[in-house]
Figure: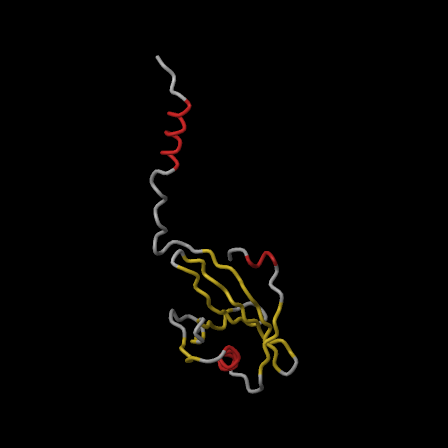
Length: 132
């Protein structure tokens, strides 16, 4: 029996590497989410919450959005990259639509703030950029 030549082995390995591509991710498969930016919400000199800019790493392209939280980390609502705000409603599957606002105005509306709010940039820890 003859052993295969080096060229034959190289062609076989190359064919194996360029074979069938991995199947595409299922539409309902989990996606990586990373934190891009963070702001502290300040009212009358006191911190009242946090705004996080997050991004879903979807194969079709990144999906940015904002999550607004209180100081305990509870989700108060969300905003799209286009400025559409919604409020989380306990024990409801749907959020309450608040309309389209700038980031500062939408956060104030979400928090029902009587006094003006300030958003102060905060550092995002290196490990916070990992998947959540």
